[in-house]
Length: 98
Image (tube, rainbow, N blue to C red; front, side):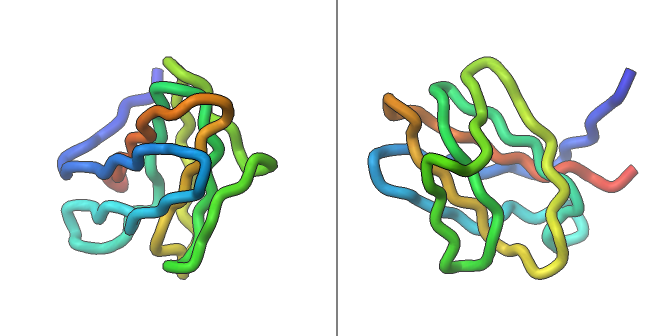
């Protein structure tokens, strides 16, 4: 069984027909984490990038009641999301390096 260590508050993106982005929430070290957990209340597409990142319908889909753990490559500072067919919330939490 894998365990998650989450000690810092994450961030939410309210999805809509246009892409929206937020800075990747930092880990307890104050730095961008190596991994983030992404959860959606409605199907959404997400993409990691810099401050100019925009998600499109061909990016990674996160289904409701499902989650993905993403590696955050060096230089990535933001995450973007866009709705699939209905608006919802995408939650991003930083995972601590264990």
